[in-house]
Length: 290
Length: 284
Image (cartoon, rainbow over all chains, first blue to last red; front, side):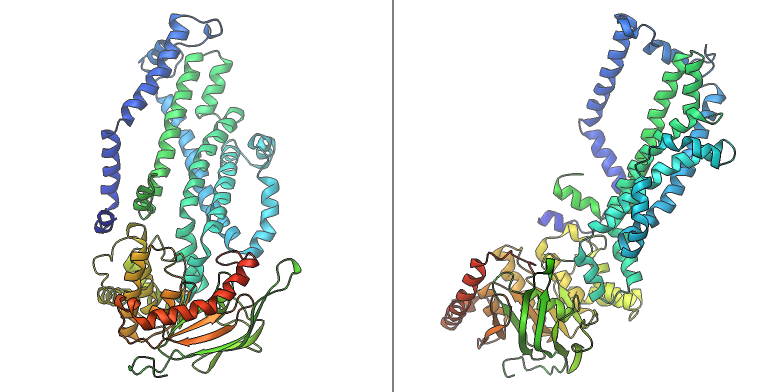
């Protein structure tokens, strides 16, 4: 207890990030992660290219995919050296960026209001509960009819799923706040606006960031679904056209690219969360979960 | 009130007259507080002692303004907080509650927590409030913990920081709802001495809920033993132990006489409450 008490000043945020990175590198975790990757890639290589298992025969093999991916002159037209590949990535990223920011900018305030104002909740939540379970794919026709061009429907569909995830988790975050904090703020003379700013928002932050993590996840999910039916660029579009024109290695390249960008985007959200919630780190460490 | 310290204290008198509080979950009228009357002198430490779930917290919450009374009135320094025509007191920094499980904001450092009141009230600028907070923390022996988040310090320290946070607002009354319940016995006795020390320095009126007899006798000028629900004073004990008190006093003959006598009074109420199977804590 004393050791914890004596470490008074919370580490500056950047130092904290470095410290965590260093601790991660020193732990056995990176080796285990590499072993996990090796296992999967090994299975892929052996099943397709060495043992040629029956249903795997038509699949692109590990070596052919990586050869294609790193080729200056790829057979099917997509590799690290081909500008169009990067255009696909950038277009998808731009859509995700716009949809995610929009979903956060609207979802967080909506969720805060849902949790904070009983009247607002009475009006809005029933509507919310009807719209939320509608799968994104069911929105596709309406989105295309409603919105002009090919870009807006895709962004709208991506936004929609993210918005619900963010708003719902934010609302739960507000409701998870211990009532004593709100009463204590009142005792100390805070107006309800000040309570909102100093208690409700920071108190809901852990849930908000859980919501944002889910939100980036579903954003990629619905983006790819939307790009498969609409649009001229993007990784989902790339997968779909490669499928129809039987360019299988390209499909796998696009899938792996999605995995990498998806991972990076949720890592960025997580990092932003740690950045804004430095106060939680010592608590989580003493609780033994991090 | 000769028992209260000699310091000139004028504010912080609480008078409760015929307070009634009824809870009505699912139409079952539960009388939590029934025609309860007593007064607390300025600068007094008044201990409310009663069985679990007897309605002490209801009374405290009514003083704080967290909920309304269904009858009677509460006065602070002859000014009506709530009563006929005004069922709920306004919540404000003249009466500050220190909660059972603590309510320091985990997302603010100890110093930011302590400075919170005057800043949101607009009474002090941020730098002034921080300077005052630093000073008050140092006075209370909490220097060096200013920049820690509540999650980084022990629960005993957290309670002390919370009391300092209340004191920075210069409240008329501190309302403590079993603040040391979750602490271990050793930490608790340190807390008791710190609280008495704080009281000696500030002379603030303290209303303190507990169900620990020794705690009540050690801290209080008076101990109000409450009946099992519905809650009202059963008997009020003047604690004529000398001040300043230290831990040695628990071994004295008078201390043991008082605790024994109070235990006898309380026992019947505890049995009543036990027989009804009251839930602990905020049953009401």
